[in-house]
Length: 201
Image (cartoon, rainbow, N blue to C red; front, top):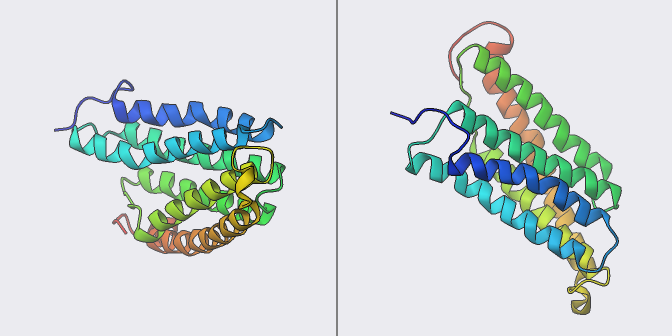
């Protein structure tokens, strides 16, 4: 039996930590200070790692709850959306990539809420998890690229252009996975969307 839903559990606190870290990461990325991009990248990496651990911790401690699921999803969306928008601002990410990823998240979240209203849970599939991992990896490389192309600690390595190219193509792959996984999610939820069934996908 799961514990009573409460905000004061380690998984939920990790989610709150990602939300709190997001404006700090964005600010570090936007300021023109040597080393700030690397600092932002390290904080982003810590936030991304916490995302992969909070679910495992919740299950191992029997602390899975609707509040925890909401906190995890909200924290992930806030983190990725904040970083994508900031990277568009500093010309690290094309607008079309950010827009595609964010629109997909809004649509899927709306469908998820509709499914929840019908007491149906549509679980994340392998494609969705691959999309998340690829997005985080691509953004992580772009943080390093930004530092290497400025006066940050990575500058002497001269790897800025290569890191930027690798990060860009990882985000292109993430965008493809975003579209494909989003369509798969909609297909799974189609009976709910047309009101034909209350069953799960």
